[in-house]
Length: 171
Image (cartoon, rainbow, N blue to C red; front, side):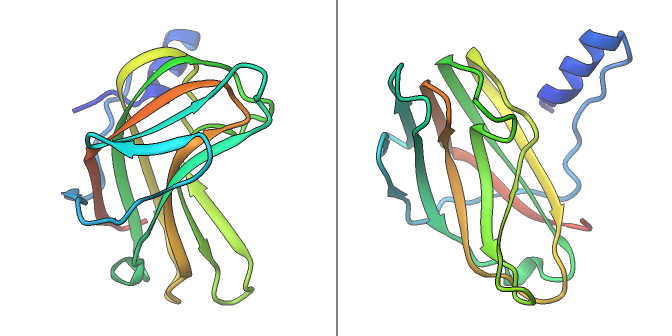
């Protein structure tokens, strides 16, 4: 099992015991998604790569794929993916940086919502496993997309698409 980045950092800072991340559900490979690359991004050789040059830190780059959230309604979504990065700078805003995110339209309000990981790795790192786990209401969100990218940072991130796993959690 991979150690969650945020637990490792917390342990280092406060000297607490390190928790090992245990997925809340059985996660299964998610290999049939159709990816679309945006500016600064591409999909090649089984990876989603986003590279934002120094000086363009206000930019964002993503690859996106539509995802059906119906199987997760009334429960939750658990997901993980491996990512490597080179020279990733600290984002301008704490909620940006490396992105492993699900974006969807909340059916009751019509507002677009974003659910993503709390880990925001910077610098150079290899094969870091990012985890996401969040609850969904009974109503199925619309226009859901899985988004992998880099926002308000420069550097390069490479997501290993073969490592992407999704599963139903109890939220």
